[in-house]
Amino acid sequence: MALRKKQDGKLVIEQTRDIALVRAMLADAGMITEGLEWPPACYLVAYFGTDPVGVIGVEPSLDAALIRSVFVIDEMRGRGIGTELFAAARKAAHTRGARTLYLFSTDAGDFFKRFGFVEVPVGELVAALSGVPEVKYYVARPEELAREVAWRLDISQDGVILR
Image 1 (cartoon, rainbow, N blue to C red):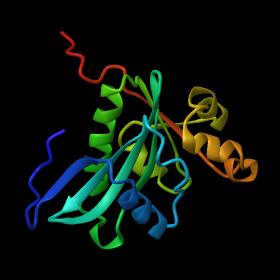
Image 2 (image 1 turned 60 degrees about the vertical axis):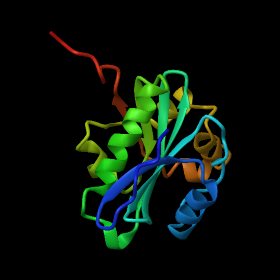
Image 3 (image 1 turned 120 degrees about the horizontal axis):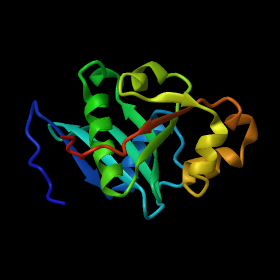
Image 4 (image 1 turned 30 degrees about the vertical axis):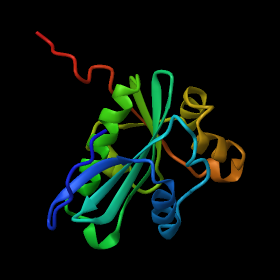
């Protein structure tokens, strides 16, 4: 993937292999960092100029993918960066064969409803993505899993031209 030129005052989203950067951003936000090294995972970082300001992850498994670790730094929120990150992650998941996106969210459900996500039973998400790191993390911690809310989005028609 070609790197885009970062310019002052411009937002650029790039796929990254810099797991140390992803880990540092998520750790600063108090988010889960286990399993970031999983080879099939994809991480996208939003840069404003040369400063990393947001991150999102995609953990694909066959025809489904988990959107994980959506984060935008406080001072950059409200500028559409989360929306841009999600759009990039959706494309990344689709190109990896995903037809359905899932995510865990206890406090950002309204944000994801705007994109068409619907709440589903946590067991559905776990069954669809049992092998991905963040799901394994929660399955190993049933008390934390019990507090989570699962969301699903059908992306099977992404890129299809309907006539």
